[in-house]
Structures are given as C-alpha cells and as structure tokens.
Image 1 (cartoon, rainbow, N blue to C red):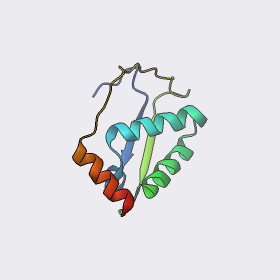
Image 2 (tube, one colour; image 1 turned 90 degrees about the vertical axis):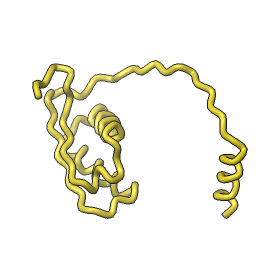
Image 3 (cartoon, rainbow, N blue to C red; image 1 turned 120 degrees about the vertical axis):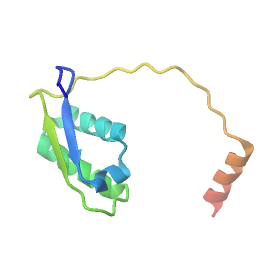
Length: 100
C-alpha cells in the first residue's frame, strides 16, 4: 500500500481492541486524543483504558504509528439535518429496559 500525505497514523491492535472498537471508532478516538496532546505513547494507553471501559475481556495491545510529527488537523464534517423516529415497539422496549 502506498501512503499519501493525507495518511495520518496507523493503529495496530490485538483482537481485544477490535472487539469493542469499530475501525472508525478507533480512528476517531485516536485522532481526538492526538489533537489534544499529540503524545503517541499516552494515546496508546488511552485506547487500552477506553477498551477496558467498553468491556473488553481479551488481551489488549495497541501500537500507533504516526506519519507526521504535528497533531492531526481538525476535520470539519457537515452533516445533513436528519429527523429520526422511533417505532411504538421500540419505545415500549426502551420503557421496559428503563423500568426493569
């Protein structure tokens, strides 16, 4: 695979990480942490801690390889306003879970 200047970092993680993070979750989490402090070692620790909080019960190992020395740029995503609705059955399920 050929890297481009848009490639920011590579996340290598054991299966325990991927049990609780989707690929996009891991990218978003890592990008936010690197934007905050730009400390790769601390970021790896934070990914593992977050995986534990999310209920990971397998081994957890994370290696992050940054391709740039500066923090990732802020990404502005414009989202269309979407109205969402919940079905009566879904509403009953939520009510049941909250009361239970």
